Amino acid sequence: MNYSSINQTVIPQILIPDHTPTTTSPISAGYWNVVAGGPTIRSGRWIHVLPLARIYIYRIFSKFVFRHAISLLGKLNCQLMIHYNPSRRSFLKAAQAVTTSMGIFGTLDTDPPEWTLAPTPTTRTLFDVTVALDGAYAVGGGGVLIERTGGGTWSTILADGPRGNGNNLLGVDVTADGEYIWFVGASGTVGTYDIHGCGCGCRVTDLSEPDDCTNNFRDIAVTGHGGNATVVIADESGQIHRSQDDGDSWETLTPGDGSSIPAIDFHATGRGHAADTSQSTFATDVDQTWERFGIEDRDESLYGLDSNGTDAVWVCSQDGQILEYDGRWSVASLGDCRLRDIEVRRDRSDGLTVGASGHVFRYTQVWNAETTPSEENLHAVTLGSADDRAFSTHDTVPELAVGAFGTILER
Image (cartoon, rainbow, N blue to C red; front, top):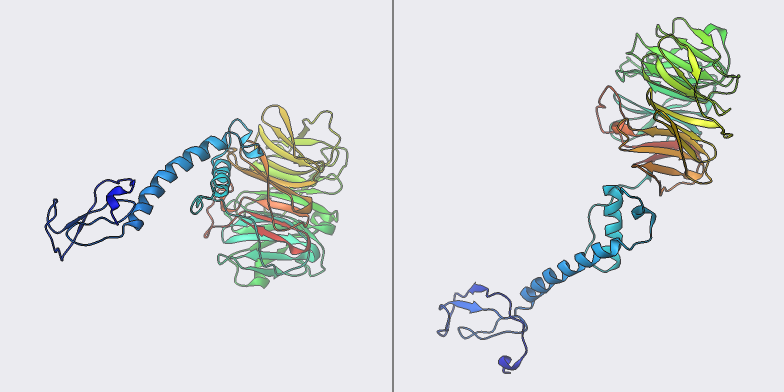
């Protein structure tokens, strides 16, 4: 066959050593001149260069495809790209979708991690979750308190509450040093768990029924270090209970009209916010005076709250509304979903809210729905080690969402 008659594409000359030359070629003896499209004779032997040609063609094709992919991204009719300031995560995810659909060899290894179901030690509903120095803790029905250790395994610490009577535990928080877990629940239940105690029996302290109060305690906010903590509890009867001496004494007041207060959070000692089911939000300072502010002309019940500063408050409602206060109120609607908890970083770079039917939404300047492997109702969420806390966890704690039937989602 006369290869000189074939219309060939010549790639840049590649010289390959030949240790057994048999003839003298126009180029230096002992080398091959490689031409794409078929073998050519140099120094008396044939060489098949198909692999080299494939490399060359692949490089040209890749440049064309990626230029075309970037062009197509601008035409995508999808939610990820309609916002004026899409996140890097959204851009990479959209880029991978385009390039994969075009059949490019392989995929971009930039997909964000997905939510997964964690093996759980309980089938009881989990109502709240927090992060401590040694891992994560969640509380729930029947008085259950469970812990996530550094190895990622969840185990049960308490099966029936600090008194062993099985009262539901509804709220949990941790001291500023991450060493003491405070939890509250039904019928005046209050307790602490010392992560450094000598054993489970001496780690748990029962502080239930402060001042003989047996109301259902819905949420708790703790500031200060263990042994000297300021603790504020919100209850189902619209009352707020505060202790400034680690639970030794308490004072009680009613900031609103007596409606249930399911959410309370503090961004500093003595400074925080609360929300009730009568569309009211309240702010307090160091003198324990609670003042109502906002939210006008709203008719939905408020359930989740994150207090990041005097003018940095996030609230979620049962009607799928996110209300943000940064000196004035703004509202974002996430559709027909009952939201129960919200947590946003203080720099507003990331946030999560969760609710009924496994709904999870992420905030990166705008709110977007995320896919989860569960349709169970979710009651609480934490950003894990990425949360704004005064301490650093011993091991990395993932983002967590907890809910019905012991559901635990991790990401």
